Length: 82
Image 1: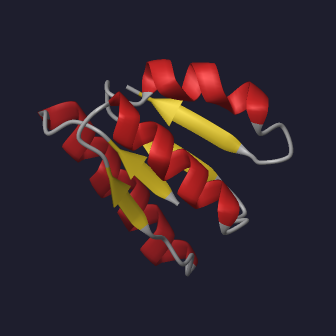
Image 2: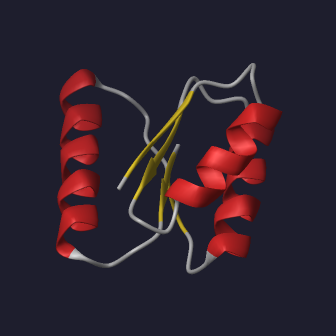
């Protein structure tokens, strides 16, 4: 799962890189865009409920919410990048 929040160039670059990596490695990647902190939180809950191998976050809009919520989902691998 790739949760994204932001439409800036660095976020687009991260999304492109993760998508290219997933394609190259044959990884099934689902992108979950979010417009604000509340949607990021909802997307994290939705992602964890599906028990993916990894939840990634891309964009400045995911950092604070990932920092706050990842401790509540210690069994789930996650990573957030600005």
